[in-house]
Image 1 (tube, protein in one colour):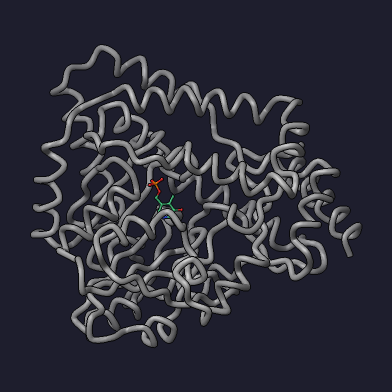
Image 2 (cartoon, protein in one colour):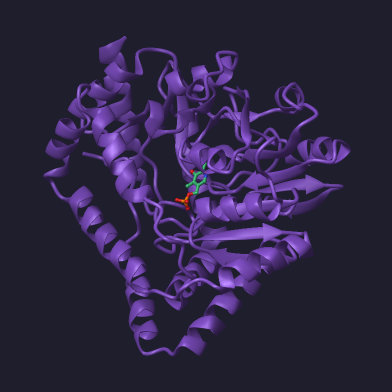
Length: 404
Ligand SMILES: *Cc1c(COP(=O)(O)O)cnc(C)c1O
């Protein structure tokens, strides 16, 4: 079975762990400060603050902007559903802006249609690493005196062009969140980064995270769990497990279990020295990683079977890699079952992203509904060799032929 994703199991990570074991609290603090400085330099943002997760970063930004009851926040209609309760808990009204199903991103028109007198912030996502029209969106937000927040969880290393100058995403809006979760490009087995050009905002967020407890256990536990999960995915038993867990009558229940296990918010703790070591390793390799994966992305996009259409990624800038996502107009549930029989583990529906408009009770976001119905995540990961890529494409073709 070709699994949906693979996490790199690397000796360098283990070595970083060993090096960290003997370090003092001061050395840990220095490692975090060095990571933040390197991150800020690479992402061309004045302030970068390492925090507990991408979702934690969003909460910190929203709180520092003092958003609350009576305020409206516009979010992408197609994004991670786990973000909604975080905003709802702050009493804000959440208003979805529809996405273009070709790019999976919001547009200036869809966001403009949702701006009202109470709108205080606009959250935009660079979906699967494809930059949204963030320069125009930021101009739109500024014209209305609204804060633009960039969700860069998928897009570390993506860039847009401003007056012919390359600008990494995350530095265009008022603030941005990055994720250092195990399945993201800058994996530090958990963690996140707030990036902002607003010194006051940065100061308020720093003051809050400085008071947090320092606990290294949770990160080590996650590293251990991810090692076990990864060995499971690589074992021959995975084919059987995937067919059981992703059977049509069970896939929904398993997905929510897996999400809960991974996304449980603990009491946010301070970013640790070990996380900083891992994140620095990833940061230094980020450009090379994106180059490797963008080449692999092209191979997939240019050799998809009939009936599939790859995400449009370059409409607004240079993409980074997160997942290979294509649209499939047929029955994606049947396709997934057929692909499993051929030894290919596809992600569909809410395993890719969620129709947040529907979850919020809005029925007027057809782009998000189309995205939810048609998006198919095709296995593609860092370190995948060309032979596996071609084998995956062959299995996809066989599965699609069977379903058609
Ligand atoms: C992963 C992700 C986040 C942040 O995730 P954390 O697990 O909290 O680090 C935010 N938005 C999107 C769209 C994501 O996929």
